[in-house]
Amino acid sequence: MTKTDADAPLHLQPYGPGPRAAEKIFETARDLFYREGIRAVGVDEIVSKAGVTKPSLYRSFKSKDDLVAAVLREVEEGFWDRFKSAEDAFPDDPKAQMVAYFEGLAARSGGADYRGCALSNAVVEYPDRGHAGRAVSQAHKQDLRDRLRAKAQAMGASDPKALGDAMMLLIEGVFTSSQMFDDDDKPALAVVGAMKALIAAYCP
Image (cartoon, rainbow, N blue to C red; front, side, top):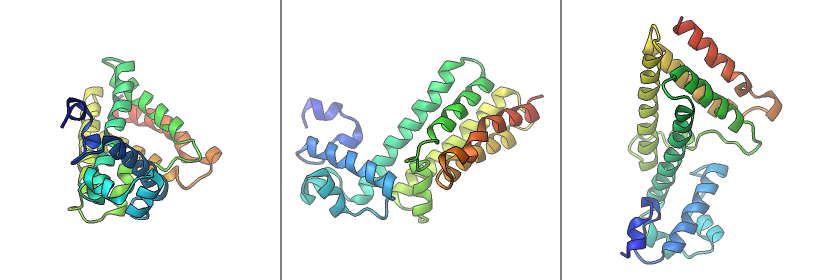
């Protein structure tokens, strides 16, 4: 493996030759999985849309499940980047950090092509906890729950576990409900107010 390959993100590191093919496969799969659902998209469609051969896919990823897990790991990275951005905007103010996060979430959920969280969608698609994609998603959601409870603790909440779980429910509610309603009638429009009400209730 060349130095360039070794320095690339894990999901772009091929098992064999062809890093450009691996990148095209990854990007195509990521878009198709999000737009159409993971189980609805087969390997043949991925390679056709990416303009590569099926052997190229299997040189870069051991299986479709391996590709799914790689895509979901990148989704997780993007989630935490946005979460940290809200934290960085309001240092040492966990209440403002969470309000800022929910403001961004409400704004992102307004698009007509928004299909919620790919990690949440994967949990629904794969009930088998042993599936590679489900495992990535499940671990992420547990990490999120733990962080939200810690954030509630930092806010001085009277019941940090309850507030953390309530924030988790708000987040997952936005992910799901935004796929059901029209842009100007999405429940997500109310989520910032709901977050502020939770803070007021748990952090008098």
